[in-house]
Image 1 (cartoon, rainbow, N blue to C red):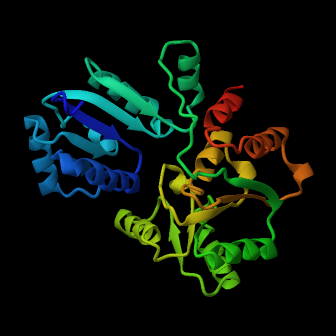
Image 2 (cartoon, rainbow, N blue to C red):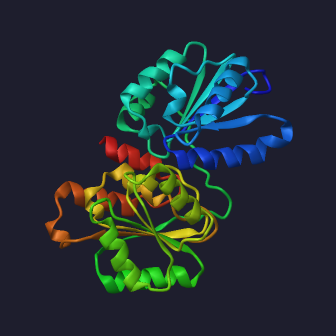
Image 3 (cartoon, rainbow, N blue to C red):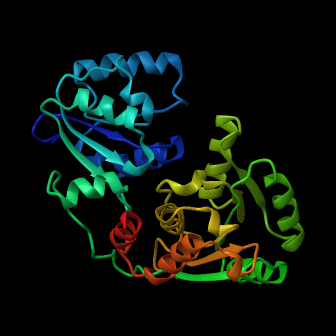
Length: 308
């Protein structure tokens, strides 16, 4: 699209992901003299004005941004392609705004787990669908296990990951009890560097915590489902999901996708706080499906199971 003289906009759901994409795109496209910029809630008002005018004049070829990119204040000289990353994270209102941008613009939507509505469109032939089934070289499937929560198990799992020089996600989806959980886990692995991340934190503080984890300065990230969207942290290869029966199927698949992103084997532990027999039928079906669909590229089957 850029070679054909058009501008490209890339829409992603979180600030952290936006900056991760910026780094990747600059690495790959910088040598061709293509200007890539990012736009998120961390963009100050002065650079924002500059970005606005450069975009309208066509001086920026690729713009990567969060929801802010959908603001009517941003106009393009020749927008030819819009890429929507992690489509399942955008609501109907955002999609309506996308339709307004759409006249003459090609849209490429990307997701590991299409939401039922999008999948239905694709299966009916209203949208073209392309499935990437071939994993990257050396990528291995993530081992998934269901187990009742127990301190001994959690300690053993974390110690094993730290011993092989890796990092760990511990996902607990209640902000109110998150500090207590972080403190408890610190007691289980005293030598680990622990950090918290959740959506109610100050944006700069959250960004700093995520960057420190990405750079390997933190061993254990105790977090909410804020990590669901496409983060790529090669050294983080174990994830423990507390109260896994409270999550949706595609959400669990997305969360599991945070580990095992390189040649190292990834491990995902679905922890439940009650006896397996006490789970609702639907929760049991979801957890069974997740253990069944562990092969690479299984997102499509997971989405179909969700649609069913």
